Image 1 (cartoon, rainbow, N blue to C red):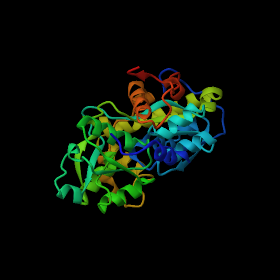
Image 2: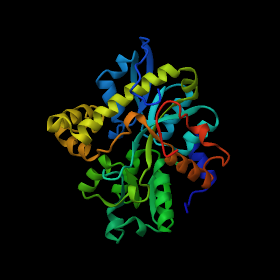
Image 3: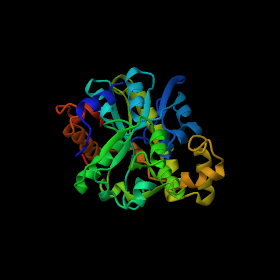
Length: 339
């Protein structure tokens, strides 16, 4: 029940087994470019980079930042980026169908007991009585591009509620935030480190949880080019092992709190180099802390959730209906869940 046709969608999209347990076979000096968004959900990359886990695995790493998932997928396919963390999008699936990319691990998942992604309403919509996702019938919903994670989350919610949404592609997260704050769109869904500070400002309102509709949603995945997955298996294993160490450090500090208040503060300070870097540490701290969600241990991948996403893209006509799951996912590198 999405008011977005296939032509619009295609135009918008156009442009060992347990990782971290293996000892890397180090070959010094490998130059690696990693794609990332400035979200706490990319903490595994940031921690591994800051704590030299990539360097210890023999990788000379450069970080390249993006503002949406689709351009990152294109960069992986073209070879401009070697590995990245991002949500599965219709564009990424289409590139996988062309043999260009492979999902090789999991990064962030919705998990019972951990506050996750939120549905937000603009102040105008909220004041008009929209206080729950099911009240968004006929309203506009922001997304970066057709087939993005925002499109998927909104559509799955709409299907569950039996309502219709008008999806508005705005290309960049910053543009969506601006449109929501000025009530140019009615609603959106986003990770808590963005949702909660926005709601605290009074400009928008939290009206629901994504986990109520997608309780085991594999929000983001680790992916690479098919060439790297096939021809650079040792490098890929080394990358995943280093990334998984960073993710484990983040979980220990922010979820288990094994280092107490000092450990959490140290992790927040590290992440502030990348998340809300334009704010002071004091200003950035609440948003970073509020954005805490567990990263997949060992980069384990919830294959059942990935399958659901692929089937939704296909049901919407956003990707070819004949694409098999194994065209998208290489399960040889990490533990899989729900297969």
